[in-house]
Image (cartoon, rainbow, N blue to C red):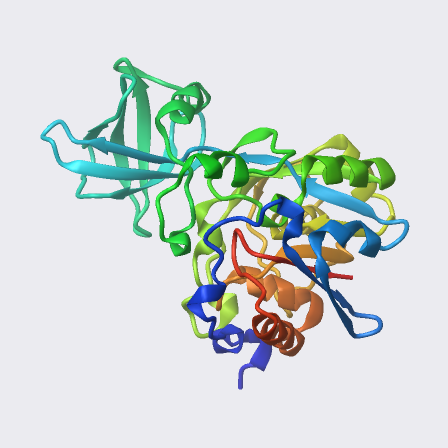
Length: 342
């Protein structure tokens, strides 16, 4: 019989629609914060403005400095048929993995503004496509396409937000310390920091940055009955020398977000390589080995992110914390409230 913690059904819960946050808290640090202390089993309800009061002493914070690109593009075939393109991730300088809404085959051309177009190279079994980008009919490196995307693209809000992106999202769906362009989803625990608060936290605590370019696979629900059968998506990561020095020491670590957690844990469990592809799936049977504390948002049912939370506290406690959050009217998902596990 399969262990309860490995059953996908153990990670299901019912969320009232009104608790799905469709807009960010304003100001950012006005979001609610649920603090769970594993040593005392105490829960504290506060706001993110008080976050620093709960940071354990002598620990270092690890932030993900990835920057969300305007990954949603609207274009058309030369014949006129409309196509929506969502960039998932660059595989190398020219091959870009995307999702296309509209009928395409290998060789299909999709035209955008600013003399940009793509040509479909491969149709993948998972529904994604590999395309090449062209500027003025010349094959372009992905890094050279980014400034055009920034001009004509749209903020890739998650599907559950159920609205078009607007100007507010251009700044709000981005952390104040976003630096390295490449993510198609925000590292959402980071969105709670105001510029002033982030500077203060960094002044008062050891800290470092890693980069994990979050892919759209982060939203993919686990569809297998047993969670370990889920094929975990892969994302590019890079660990700064400063982060490496912290991670190679015995200083306790507080990761800001599931994305920095996945990065740190992949580094720790897979030979301490500073950059490459990370596809680590943390769950109660694959617990964290280096991260001591976690700041995170409230996640989708049956998601690998909720399973990551359970890797810190166990599935029963994760469900209990989520039940309390729902009762206390915490806002869920990307623009929602936060939880600190210490």
